[in-house]
Image 1 (cartoon, rainbow, N blue to C red):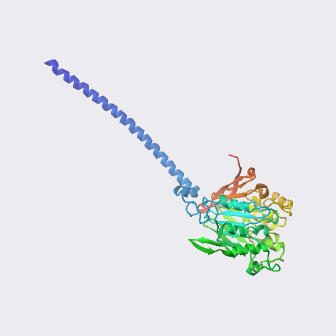
Image 2: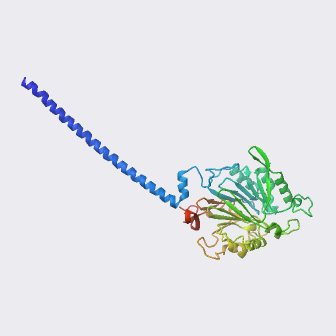
Image 3: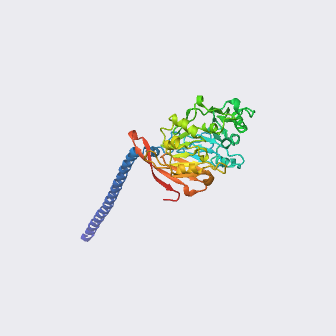
Length: 426
């Protein structure tokens, strides 16, 4: 009987010991898990603190990046991400892009703006030197262009307006900006009073042009290039300058080449602290007029579309080049009888140095020619970076990276080019 009573007691002791052992084991695991979780929590807390510090630094040093982090689908122009605006071409909403199209001895520039608008400038080639309209059409096709918000004709020379009727037929145009020539002269069929048969054809095409807006067909607007005038969107502006109406040289069949060319507007396209300058065929006469008006006093440009295909009688050293201080130059030219671009003009560009040394590059870093390099594309990004590429010679492709200075209220000012990277460099 006695042995029968002791056995259950021992079993009970063993069970208690086993329970204690299991409790210790569970407690040990729980402690390890708690410590592990605590370490994870500490690590998470440290990461959060570092992220907050990083965001604070970004907020004060790079506010546009901070805005993008908070609103990744919104661009810095306030237009809300990718834009189309009826042009048929969707761009990324953060760059100004200009393509100098190879049209032979002539001009044909296509521009895209971050707020969705677009523009074409001129469009022609020298008579008897081939048909280059296919090159313009190829750019329209590549970029899906069905409408132009602006179409500017700088002056009435054949090599700048030849393709105007074809451009009007290929896409819709909302607004034309044209030389100050009366409608009587523009529509005249009398060779003793008209400007030229080519101009009359171009003007008739503009008068007949329509575009569609909200399902309604409207006639294109036609305005004159006169004096100082501006174009612009939410984040870009183009300041243009030409003759005032009172001083405007007569434009008819007997006016002469000097008066035909001098009326070309000089336009400064500004975006993200960068400036691109368009010049048409403006010559010494026109440059001197604008110089004396003081229109060039406040510009320090990055890219120059060289006037008049590299003619000796354009891009005057004193009246223009020394005032605007370019870093890159683009010459639109092709086979011609004028030896454009002339050796004198090329030497003027290559030997140019800053009159007053400043923080940007000293002199012209690269010259592009559409006859040698094909289409030349300039991209001005929202951070101030400029990229220049060409379709024929990729060795000349560059990217000019901007250094910035932050002034009052975190305003960003581009102060100089920090580094020029050629294609293929890391």
